[in-house]
Length: 153
Image 1 (cartoon, one colour):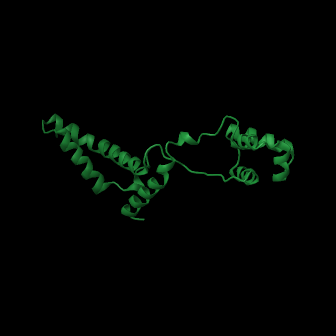
Image 2 (spheres, rainbow, N blue to C red):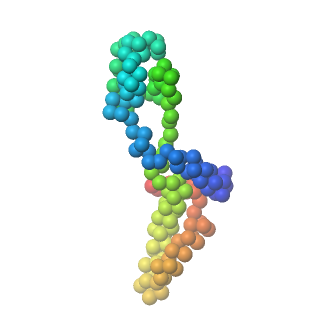
Image 3 (cartoon, rainbow, N blue to C red):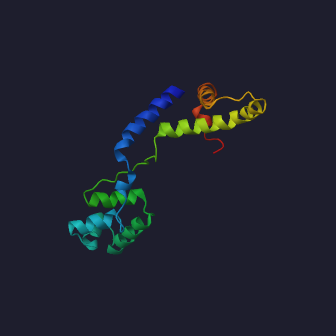
């Protein structure tokens, strides 16, 4: 995939994920979603167990597992279906994907160009801050490829 296609793909993903921000809106209740929804519906653990086709003790185990963050997605989906719910699963970046890539590219360019900047500064040929930023931008455009950004993280 070309860099341009990757940029478009990142921007599309950023647009799709934007409505999910801030992700803190979707934090699970302290005892987990299964327990919260089961309680809100007035459904006992035995009743949910019957709907899922498991022992009543399994409901408690799954609820505890969800609250601890160790529940398996396929198990959670089975319980969600029994509660007439849908599991929504997403990875929501803390910033934008495009921003992450640009920040990483600029960080690498700064490190690579710092060596020559130091030499130029010693010779009193240093660049102004604007010239350095322009040099970084040019380096990113000309030399850095997205696939190379995460090699030495």
